[in-house]
Length: 308
Image (cartoon, rainbow, N blue to C red; front, side, top):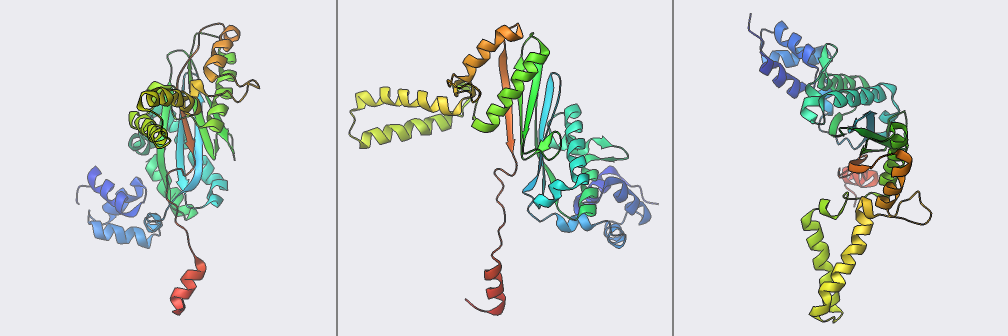
């Protein structure tokens, strides 16, 4: 009997999309012959997942989970919004978030993490075969503080901790945990609504700032402004830009007077009983950056019939 190696099982799993345990059995039943193992899985009806792999998965759910000083946010995609209402899929997302909280945000590590007698990747493949749509763990992020809290907010939630958008915010502080958690949730809601690009100007991509600077400078040159004035005008323009895209400088959505987030956090220190530092945030919106496929049914019918 042929020796079934982990590399063989991995290759078969990647080819068919079937769980690792089923791949191992298929290879064992067919003396290590890869082609025969693929046929064996097809006959068993287990390789349905492979047929779905080429489809664009741009729907699904964002999952956010926190546990005291750490938290994670993940995106698990499916082909249709209908699947997001499927209880099996919802359970899969919650399970993956729980695994990510333990193993970290590396997608490969999450996929390889053991779940029962299989792995997360195997559980996803099993769900694909059962539900009938392509699914994928697209991305994950984690935040942790030495003391304080990591808070979360899920927008458009379909179940507790999973919805169309998820945010986690990390607050470093020795203050009261309950007050920090309440503030953290408010800040997470702000991030969801205001979509900051960085914590402060130092966190912005230098290339983005450079382009912004160049665009403003060119605009004022075209207006005939003298060169010795342009630099000062651009610097003032950048200050306005920072107020739009940097979390600490944005107008806090929970304050009617529009005070900056940084100021609101400073004022909250009295209630919390200690200094507070926002050390990071992550905002995931479902499907952002994925090019969704669209279908023009009328064009398809015309093409088949030879009409234009």
